[in-house]
Image (cartoon, rainbow, N blue to C red; front, top):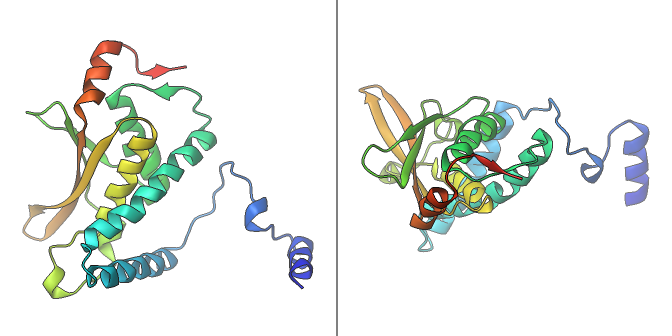
Length: 202
């Protein structure tokens, strides 16, 4: 029965999920489908929060798993054959290449002025917070925690261990943006100082 279904899909020109190429494609998920799927993720995390888990922690945990896989996919698709060894290089990759793939636009990369371990990515139009409504008693929750998990997963997978958190920033009375605070472990910066110049390794 299942085999007949697969053969019928092939005859109609619809490859199965496992047969699809990993190369670049112009396929995009519609905004309504994305909003529906993410709202279901939020509802799942909300139910977990009622059982004693923090909702943002659950969102972050799910995003972390995505981040580990996204790095491999993007490196393959972009044919990026060299490994980044500098903090600024990997963060530029995250805020441009990865951000465009995930959200359709680049994020703004910022450096903390008084701490060499901290960087930030700001997004003034983060989709994760745009179409999601949460209970009034949880209005402090930032659903960008899911994206924070993705960032952390990418960085840890690339051997830049860091802790990433999402924060709501009021740019003006009626305008809010999401800032992702990235705190690298001290050994990341120490390694970069030892390596000196150069941004990538073969």
